[in-house]
Image (cartoon, rainbow, N blue to C red; front, top):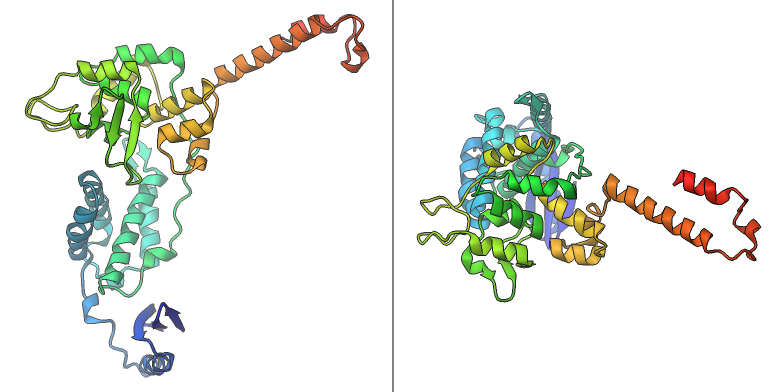
Length: 367
């Protein structure tokens, strides 16, 4: 096949069971000649495998990818995550040349990972998808840097993820939840509950990012890469002011040596155990923040701005109601209808509302 991108013509052909792609130049006629020559070489068995640059092993390119792409273009935490993802991928692809990795082998990797158990639980579909996304990015860079001709991940379908999971704390659960936290963890939980900030944003928060006078937290590095301003209420202000400052560290939440907390999972899990709360993650505090805003009557547009979402669609998934809130809404509606019926003048045409001598009594029973 012959196709054009921008001013450059490309050719595509099959060789040794693989689809080869090459950039030829700005002349379609020349591209047709090169394609004809390549096809003839394949038919006559004269095609000499792949380019010399394809003789690169997965583990070697993975190191180059991390050093030249992840560590240069991503935040330290994200770059570290790439290294962890590659470590998992290496268990399956180490020793293979890039050109040897096929879509079929990647499908086999998917199957193996899907059937892997950690702590009596199967690995989540989202986890495998993040690994495949990293592998896909690696191959895209390999193509861009002239180290590969094709991206085999492009043909692999990702697992379907359940993004509708929404877990949040009921109002009655929050006081006990906070009181059960260790001293170093409680202010972190308060900030999460009352600002909706992500765990990574909280743990990397520095004193210079706080403007107590205006009540604003400045987030310079967010998930979508944009600067964001987070408003503080009095609870958050008082909480942060009470956090002891470490003279040797710019971070608000840090160890005695000044290094920021990398994770608070153990202490967080301890709180859940004390409160007998199951199926709850740190990120669900962000769900809690958004859910209670909606249940307090705050409009979706304002919630979107407070959450830092680019599109309203991202916020709509938080605009659910808890069972208790739904029940209260139905109770309010019932009281409103009964009050209106009780105040209806006797001269009203009761047939229009279907009222009978016992209608009010029936409504009260239903209520």
